[in-house]
Amino acid sequence: MDASPNTEGPGPGGRIRVGTSGWRYASWRGDFYPRGLVQRRELAYLGDRLSTVEINGSFYSLQRPDSYRRWRDSVPDDFTFAVKGSRYITHMRRLRDVRTALANFFASGVLALGPALGPFLWQLPARLEFDQGLLEDFIAQLPTSTAHAQALAGEHDERLDGRAWLEIDEDRPLRHALEPRARSFDDPALPALLRAHGVALAVADTAGRWPRFDADTADFAYLRLHGSTELYTSGYDAGELRAWARQAIDWAQGDAGGTGPRDVYVYFDNDAHGHAPHDAVALAALIAGEGADGREG
Image (cartoon, rainbow, N blue to C red; front, side, top):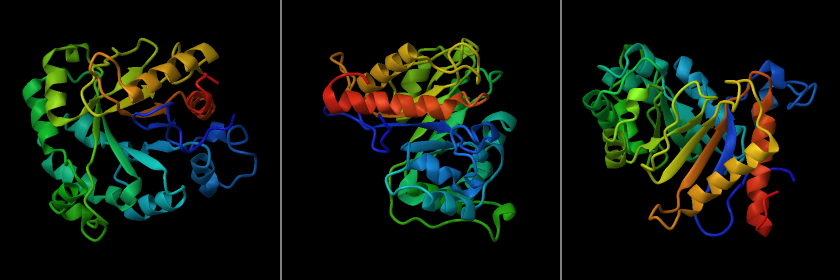
């Protein structure tokens, strides 16, 4: 079964979106991408087969509004972009004194995605230990709506003069997910802090490299699949994909223990050998098949 851009689990509940972490990889060309497909058409090709993608370039440097607009125009109207937060904020500033850096990030063009703008992912470095006060101060600065982000973006410094994007089409809620990698984040204060702000605690499958956190802290779930046996390298077999499909559907439907239905975002980051897009298409097909006829595909 081909994956549908409108992947959802069976029955009432949240929306499930499945995609990849990034889309521009040489190893995908002539494999996932047909031989001869021009590079500028790669995102459109992926957008016809999946419902979301995680923008990685925003982690490494501030992108430009023209790039965000071009990406938005390359995909179907119902497609969603997750945006990875700047490593300058998370890895270099290590969440300290980041007001201006946050303003520059939100002024760089992310708001040009309009209705295609999905959650923001803030991935923390493994050497950043849990500091409740520091984390609470950082999260309190994150904009909770596009109007809030617009106001924050207006505080950008001179580096964004002449290239800032400060427009929104309407005021919409914004979502944020946190992916910590230090074991000290296994602290009961963390879920309480995230719940207070509606921030999702990302679930990350990292082949055992970093701890896995899975507390329910928001009205959506954010899953990153980095590889089950080899970090960034190994693919997921049929049994593993069925297990993740079942987990995504459970999150979307909620459970009898009081956890309500949640929207679910799933991103495959096992791209070193080109497994990510194939695994994403397979997982989306499993979930869509379950929704169509009550069976796993």
